[in-house]
Amino acid sequence: MERKARWGITLPLYGQGLAEQREIVAELAGLGYTDAWSAELNGIDAFTPLALASQWASELRLGTAIASVYTRGPAMLAMTAATIAGLAPGRFVLGIGTSTPVVVKQWNDIEFAEPYQRSRDLLRFLRRALAGEKVTEQYETFRVTGFRLENAPAEPPGLALAALRPQMVRLGATESDGVITNWLAPHDVPQVRAAAGPDTELIARIFVCPTADVAVARTIGRRLVAAYLTVPAYAAFHVWLGREELLRPMLAAWHSGDRKGALAAIPDQLVDDLVVHGPVEACRERVAEYQATGLDTPVIAIIPGPDTNVTDSVRKLAPA
Image (cartoon, rainbow, N blue to C red; front, side, top):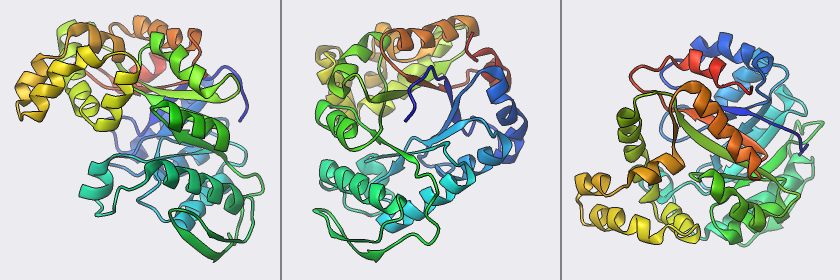
């Protein structure tokens, strides 16, 4: 993927229907945004917002962050990616990752097994399939027999892998074009960059709560931190980053079933490190710190407070 100064936004925007976002999406490139990356959890899927954005904003690079390697079969994932690549020639990046056991097992009744191997196998399959090859291959985690895209994109999309720890980061650097990460502070970026190497695009979703009310921002931030950093993969990521002692009280309370205690055990400094908050101008400067420490593509995810106008925040958070 092309390496240049980039500045992304997460779609869909919180609290608005997809059709209602056409005007602001059409403005993004003029505001200075280069990228729009989708998010997928239990709301809108990863691909539909990008299909719409491909027609509303012809200059933006579009990416999924992320489509799970488990919840769509290999051929279906290739077909969906080829569709978006055809709508946005040369402007689409397929970001894939494992997601979490809750999403994969509890919500979709699919075994969450061999995440490293499954990610590696999907990247290798997708590289061939999206190039228009006919694929018959016994991979370690699945088999494909005689699949070829009917409408392979003239320009295959880039591939990126969501990764939190060194082994997966290195896999992304070796088998894809970019590494996607999140839930890190600017001073954490060099450690992830060292694992990825100098030549891999490093992308990260940055959670931004643009409110001057520090107490409100930290309350929102604590809920987000507890929801994510209690997931084993994220907890292990932060152990790697050196936060094991800082997280221990929260994790102990959480695993004992004391949710209120877990929230109370999250120190202000942890929230301030991982969730960008404050007046919009200060938030924009904080996001720029990630680039200064080695991140190629910050992707802002606006987490609104009670006084937040999301559309207005998108405009004000555009690069200076």
